[in-house]
Image (cartoon, rainbow, N blue to C red):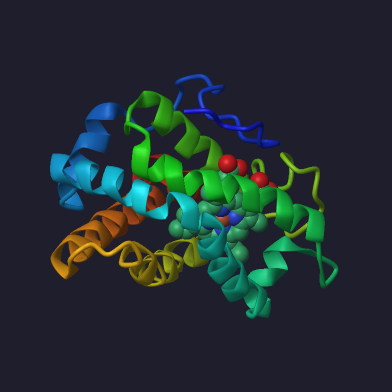
Length: 194
Ligand code: HEM
């Protein structure tokens, strides 16, 4: 699909060097109960969400902005970096659609590793030449599974699908976000502890 150039969005431009092997991803998908039907439900969700991404980002950015302990990760010496917030927001919007539509293959795995590094001190701030906090602590990455899931329910219900279909789409989204967050924990833990 046509992606207008998003600064710093480098999907498909990284060596396929994810430390997580496709076989391991298969086992992780089984463990979060992610199956082919979830892929179908996420495709449907992408249609439901396509024209709502800005509204979703308003909610998520409102959540971060109203919590100083989260906003600090976008801040330098206590001052939120508006340009950094705006630059990340564009990629975050693309991530919503990517999570629903991209095949979870080795290209996808490689970009998960890249985003993981961008949250970790290894690469944080580099993409946007920011000078904010040097690392996002792992505990908040894991904690974010909850707000990124709970807040999605109303958006998934907004296009008139029946309650059961909405619940299934919501469950598929929950599994996808959980899979994402756990993959992103990789740089934070010792090699043999992932
Ligand atoms: C970057 C999603 C947790 C702050 C990003 C991006 C996405 C994303 C999609 C842009 C990736 C790209 O460059 O293409 C998520 C998800 C999370 C999570 C799914 C948890 C499940 C957090 C938390 C914070 C946070 C807890 C703290 C407020 C940031 C910041 C960046 C970023 C500061 C820019 C990093 C950089 O310098 O490149 N996140 N995020 N994220 N996120 Fe998160």
